[in-house]
Length: 67
Image 1 (tube, one colour):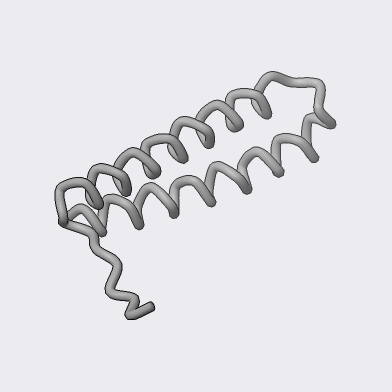
Image 2 (image 1 turned 90 degrees about the vertical axis):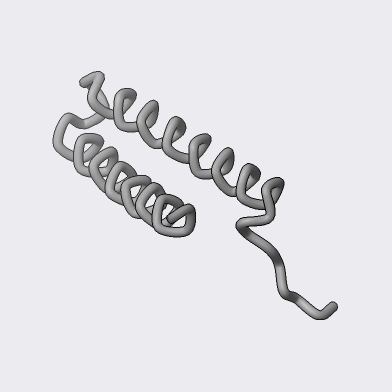
């Protein structure tokens, strides 16, 4: 369940990235929609990092690297 939430947040972050690019091209940087897209993207990224940290802390996510 945690991994699915992380993947979902990453996908919505990518969608927000491209929507910000679209608004930047369409509005030529004059509107506030680019700033709103950036705010959403930063919030989603912070939530993703928090979920990853929580998953590592609780043991739901683990690194199985041998080195």
